[in-house]
Each structure stands twice: as structure tokens, then as C-alpha cells.
Length: 201
Image (cartoon, rainbow, N blue to C red):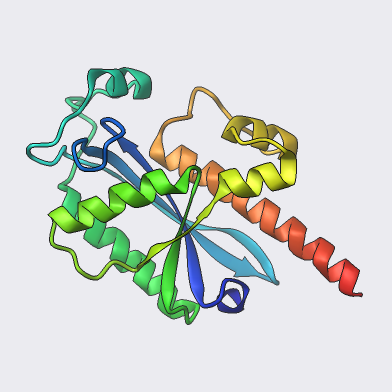
């Protein structure tokens, strides 16, 4: 069972796009979660959900961040929602998966996971959300997994070493980055488990 592989933690890939690097001062602009399923002892990608976020009142969006993300906050097709709504809806979905796999908590998986985790914590505080499904301080970082498996830390280079397609034109979209990070996570864990099983045999 998935719960036994991660000590009753449900791995959930999270990617945020933000208006800067300070979780207390800069707004969240996109939230994406990628769920993980288990099929015949292998980790595979499950549902994905993405929300465009209206910048929280009083928080900054740096011009350099928008240029880097190539993001137009006023695009008519953006359909942005309030930060609290996106968090609550994401947590409902995660809690459903927690129950399915009999997990006690979710654990955030991310590329440079501390960044996404710190922004999520601050967002929960300012929206008075007291029950996050995520562990309050533990996380799984694909930078660490990537350097172990491939000697690389950059997501694009890790993907190249693992033969995972990576499109630079799609990068820095929360949904795309979450999907690719999930592919890296599943590939490294599955390969490790295969090697470990063969050694035991």
C-alpha cells in the first residue's frame, strides 16, 4: 500500500508561481497540485488541479516575477479565484486521497520544496486555515532525489538524465512544473524500489 511506502504520508506534488521570493510579502499567483496513485506497486500520476490566484490584498507582485513567468494578471481568460478558495478546494481533494489510501497526513513534494512549503504555510496563516492536510515541517525535495539519482539539481537536467520530456516553453506554469516534478518523483522512487527488490531477491 502507498501508505506503507511513505510512513502513512500521502505524497502530493505542489508547485506555486509567485510574485517574488518572500512568502510574507509576495503574492501567490498560481497553485497546482498533482496527485499520486499506486498501480501494481508502482507510483503513477493521478489527478491534477490548477488554480489561477487573485493576488492577496496588500501583498506585492514584482514586475520581474511577471516577466520571468510571462504572466498577464489581467488576461481575460485567466479566471482567477481567491487564494482561500483555491487552498480549501485543494485541501478537500487531498483529504479525499488521504482517505482512499488510509494515510494520516499529506507530505508536500516539490522541486526546491521549502519554497512552496513556506508560501503554503503563510497562505494558511493569513486565511485563518488551521487544518492543512500537509505535515507542518517535513517535505520531500526532488532536488535532493535528483542529485542522488542523476548528479543534477536543475529540473530540466534531471529530466534529461531520466529520459523524461521537458519543454522549456511550457516551464514555469504551475500545472506543467507540478506534472514534470511528479514524473521525476515517480521515476526515481520506482527505480529505487526495483533495485532494492532485486537485491533482496
